[in-house]
Amino acid sequence: MIDAYIAAWPSLPEKLSAGTQSLYRRNLERARKLWGKLPANGLRPPHVQAVMTKLADTPGAANNFLSTMRALSAWARLRPDAMIDRSLCEGVRPYKLDGGHRPWTEAQIRFVHDHFTGPLRRGVLLMVYTGQRGSDAVRLGPTMLDDGGFDLGWRGQIKTGQRPWCPVLPELAKEMDTWEKRPGPYMLTESGRPYTRKYFAEQFKEAKEELAKKGITVLEGATLHGLRATAVVRLKRAGLSDTMIGDIVGMSVSMVERYTRFENKRESGKAALVILAERAQAKKNASGTP
Image (cartoon, rainbow, N blue to C red):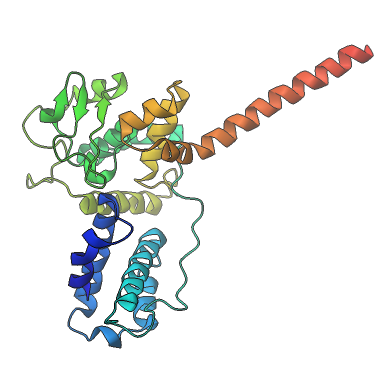
């Protein structure tokens, strides 16, 4: 059923983007490892719920798995020769998320500058200053530098295939001056192997856990993907338009607006305080109150 679904993607009425296909493939491989040898028609919602429960610590990943299973289930049921006779996901509910990956605070970024070392430091700072996803940040290296910026090459971004040109900002350039200049990515393991997105996430998680054991909570709630939002917010504060930001980090204008929603609310609140203070002062002046 999984093989037939993937083979049918080119003929689907609603085309799947490269990013969606990549996401679906990862989740379908999870399903294949778990249930690949079982009869498709024997799968039931409790099977899917069991995976959701296992992924409870990463609700975003759990919800992505559920979305994939819903898509697979709907396609398989609507085939002329229905491969399953009921939904695989009936009654299975997604986890409620807390508003997405929030941008990092300046204190959190400063903590990384002051305390992180090695490939983990490089990865976090590359994400802060380029806005690339972790899957693309681990690929960045000196051979990708072109005319003062990073060119992701003919493959483009792993998820979308977009090819943004990411300027190397002065803060990042100063940091990169201390890194060894050699072919290959900046992030290598002790054995010299390139980092993967998964290994990057594992290393970051372990670092946070070690800090928590010492009672250091400055990175509590910080996520790697939140660094993408951080980069967008920093560029927004610098006065760049949403279109320019989208070109730099490789995302749509609507996504730029979404990533800056927390910053926009904060700035609106500050502006409101100024306006209210000015009105209060004008009212005092009009009444002659000192």
